[in-house]
Amino acid sequence: MPSLWADRDFLRLWLGQSASQLASFANQVTLPLVAVTALGAGAAQLGVLRAVQQLPILIFSLFVGVLVDRWRTRTMMVYADLGRALVLAAIPLGWVLGLPYLYVVGFLAGIFTVCFDVAYMAGLPRLVARDQLAQGNSMLETTRSAAQICGPALGGALVSLLTAPIAVLASAAFYLVSAVSVGRVRRLGLPAEPEPTDSPATPQGVPTDLPLSSPTGLRRQLSDGLRIVVRDGALRAIATATCVYQFSFTALTTVYLLFLTRTLDLPGAVVGLVLAAFGPGVLVGSLLSGWLPRRFGYGRVLVFAALVSDVVMLSTSVLDGGCSATVAALIAINVLYGLFSQCVDIAVTSVRQAITPLAIQGRVVATINFLGLGLTPVGALLGGAVASAFGIRVALVTATAGLFLSPLCLSLSPLARVGRSLG
Image 1 (cartoon, rainbow, N blue to C red):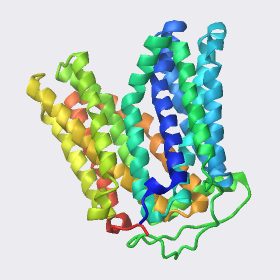
Image 2 (cartoon, one colour):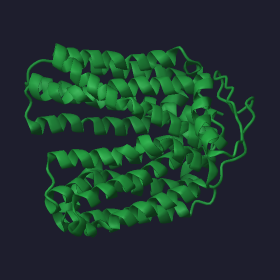
Image 3 (spheres, rainbow, N blue to C red):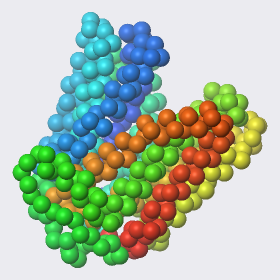
């Protein structure tokens, strides 16, 4: 299998995606700081800003999936980068138009982010061979993890050096770098014709019977994404595991901060250190995710890595007190959880890309994202309700127990039988 390090088109995509992700995570700091320092926003206004940035995921994901399957992937990604750069370049108008304008900026930037994310996740299988998907996803997720760690720090540094509004303009330059780099990718074009369902490239152990159709109507294509995911056993298992994981993980994160601050009585600085431990774990997991499936098989990695990560997180509930040993245990737990959960995420992504025909990659990834993220508000509400009714520790155990439904879904599906190769 040829290395992607020698593939110039992939390296251009990698550079563009890295610059884009770095700007996105930096803006998680710079845009709220513009609201606070330049426009005098309070806690309620920051909550609204965060909500309008996330709202496009639910509203536009399915529609964007159809567009990705109709348009050139490269075109979608370049337009998304240019759109975000243009929107952020107009930030100075916020001094005149106030917070409502910043909400519009956050919403528009969120729309373009959905376009970019769906396009690059659907575009990788159109660029590399199936046996290269694990390596490609590992490299892309490694830089994404690094951006997740370094992006907020970069945003904070830019604010300190340049003030918040100018820091947002500097972030826009990263989107321009991404647009130029992705625009030079020659092979990232239109999706190929639908592949036959008995294609020999289907991963061994994963039967697929995807109902391919080629309607021209937008409404039919929107419904096709859901129909395809529901009817195919492997994709249905991925969607189900994603839904129960996102639901439970959102409930977990809702009570996790309460557990750290109220049950363990940890100070803010220590809480930040504990939460930051996820980052290095995710980064290491990204680096290992290209090797582990080739050594043990995708099915084993999916099931056992998910199970180990959940067992590790469950051990949090037995901790008590805010001593140094507790803090060290929390850091170790978060590093291990980030490592194993990232291995599962990349393995699932690689298998999904391999079993999905190129012509419907956009709709499939958009549908799974929509279904998974659609349950997160319910998970957050339920986590808070259980904590209020039965206590924080009970809510933590309940939410963590819910995570085990994800490896259970994977173990009962055809995905558990996937071997070491996706070719």
